[in-house]
Length: 79
Image (tube, rainbow, N blue to C red; front, top):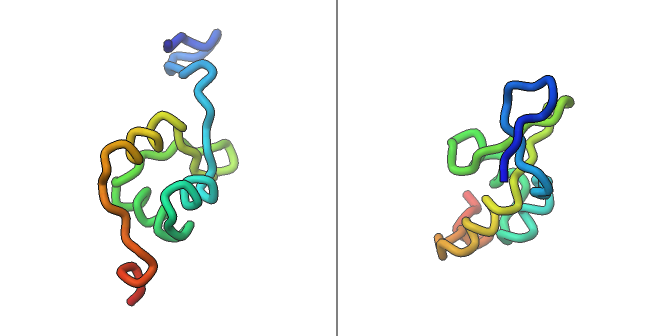
């Protein structure tokens, strides 16, 4: 469910938890740098905190896990 926050013109998702880069990396079995690269390249959409830190809707991460999209292994991700 989405509602408008009083005094705000943006829509806010109520009760949808946000997860950190570190939590996303652990869930997807990739490095935090990989998660940040995905944000920079548009693979993951991030919400920025007032301090500029990226956060992710838990539903978005669950959807990514359910797609079965392969994630690189440590060996594949190394240069």
